[in-house]
Length: 376
Ligand code: UD1
Image 1 (cartoon, rainbow, N blue to C red):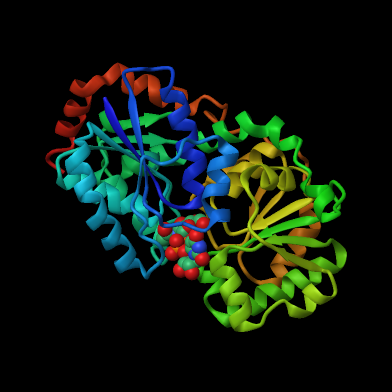
Image 2: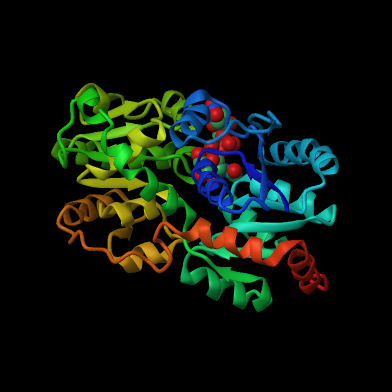
């Protein structure tokens, strides 16, 4: 079975790494790694590949940054000839980024089976570009590999046939568990002069939080307040870096040492930074999952989450973007009991389950699943 594995943006790499690794146990599964080039800075791409020991991509589409329509269209334009040349039996996409939806569209139109890893997550907020990407990808995919219980419920409600649904667990957690010991050896705390539990970690990159000056300023006021009580380390995403400069926010907090912006970190350093933090503040999806497993309280700076299993597990609190709510949640978060029960299937074996399923299905099984979704 020839499998084209798609990755494009930073959070995709940890997921693809687990899948490609699991394919090694099944010689009949032949992966080709296609990098769309959606993320291209060394710190956003190559540094993560290196940390994960991921082989270099077989194909790099080098699309780079652009607005949504242009970026999605450019990925499609460049991916179509790759599918025509490689003639894969399966295109495997992960997550919810523009690369995910673009490659799913190309493959389905060329009659190639599509597998979506991390299917079924829903924020029920269509103002998020990721929600659109998730809905479209799941409407097209033939194999929907689901990471948490809510995904099964959502896909059933959307009418996806039972045969196409596979509850496998969380591949991002496979990668976390695999690299946890190596991450423990990271010297990032010493390099940044931090003591375990003596700091908070912040990440922020959602357009809804950083693209509007007023919202970003309001959030920054909350971070400055928190920073007086506990210094905040802030690895800054390139999108956010541009807005920090354009809107001139956080300058005072940075000068007084309350908030410390640093460049994006590679995978192992970031894992260590999270694992030793007193609390993590974030608008990322994957970080909500990672903190649940690392047993670190997480404040999600959004109005909703597509990952309710992290809230049910007890360590993720969806706080929104109101500064008062963030401050009060911060004060109680540090006291949260660090005893979250991991959600079902977040056990380090999700990718192995995917690989075993694919090996068992074979190309005849893929054709059958394509047939099941044929009528819509
Ligand atoms: C993308 C995903 C988002 C994911 C995030 C993880 C979509 C719609 N969004 O958002 O779901 O959570 O990745 O990081 O696919 N840039 C660089 N260097 C890079 C990459 C980006 O400087 O290597 C800058 C560019 O100015 C670019 C901006 O960051 O315009 C945004 O990049 P883009 O890939 O469009 O979206 P993200 O915000 O990274």
